Amino acid sequence: MQSNGTLWSWGYNAYGQLGVGDTTQRTGPVQVGSATTWTAVACGAYHSAALQSNGYLYDWGYNTNYQLGDGTTSTYLSPRMVDAATNWTAVSCGWYDTMAQKANGSLWGWGSDIYGEQGDGASNTYQTTPKQVSVPGSVSAVCCGYYQTFSLTANGSLFAWGVNNYGQLGLGDTANRGAPTAVPRPNTSPGDDAGWSAHAVRLVGSGPDLEGSGSSFAIKANGELLAWGRNWNGCLGLGDTASRTSPTQVGANVAVGADNLWASVASGPIFTMAIRGDGTLWSCGSGAQNRPLDVDDAGETCSARSPVAPGRQQLDGSGLRNDQVVALKSNGHSGPGRQRAGPARLGRHRQPHEPDPGRQRVQLDGRLVWEVLHRLL
Image (cartoon, rainbow, N blue to C red):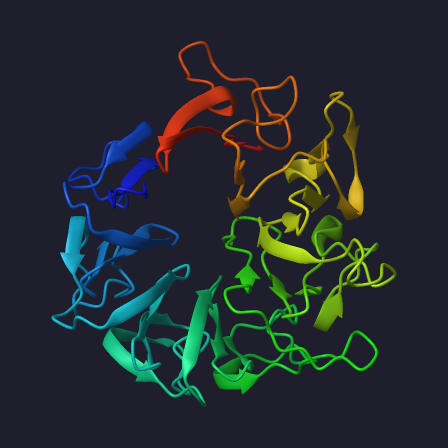
């Protein structure tokens, strides 16, 4: 989205998930419709959803698992209104399901319920239209992953449900949950009882064809970063490759309040990036096929099971999904002497006819910024 309320999309489009009225792939940003009132957007595996300032919720794309919530399995190539409600405030898309929050703090879900991700106690089924999820308390944030959901409540509690084969729900075991279950809040610092930070839960959004699904991350209110679930190639940043079934602090040997305050975290299938309070971007894990992810400003690669700073470039946001990396700098540039944000492009050489996504300027939020889109094959 741009600051003028317009919505833009690009990339794979076989199911109309770009919302531009066709199934043609786009290699650069294309405006979705003509509306200038968009306020939030979410992407699933092959479907998308977005909110407008008037409280209406729209979705579009692939719909075989009823993830568009209209009671059918019809694919939509352009945004369509979910219902007539005007009090939607947040939305998150899972692999084949959708969760959305209303102004009264209620949570609603639709789509796949194969592993209980709808939180209704059922499994191996589908929810064809929006249905309220019984989360204890008023929901303040929601985040969907690969067949699982996390929600935060106004009192600082974190709830999880859905698939849990690697302990990614953080409940101390690997049993799936069909209903919202409270995630224990570890007191990782002496005398600490800080709640979970709002808008901080991030999940790996990988698919069944990738070997790295099943990692979860959260930031507590005091700035501590916690990780749990599958630890493929050290992507949890805990210094080893052992999976965890309970939230475990990243960088526990560094005192909070010194150099260990975290502001944002995002994860791909086998790698993770996080931003510290000082604006530096850190990463751990590796690229696909065991290629190292991390590249510093000198072009040197390194393998990392604990967070390292690739060039220590100042950033204000990052987002990962599957095998892509997107990062934005706050000053509209990508670091001293280089026109790139974060790690350099890895993994393959582009074909002669293919645009280079690693050095492409786009206009975003009224300013020029550089985006890095890495395809690690």
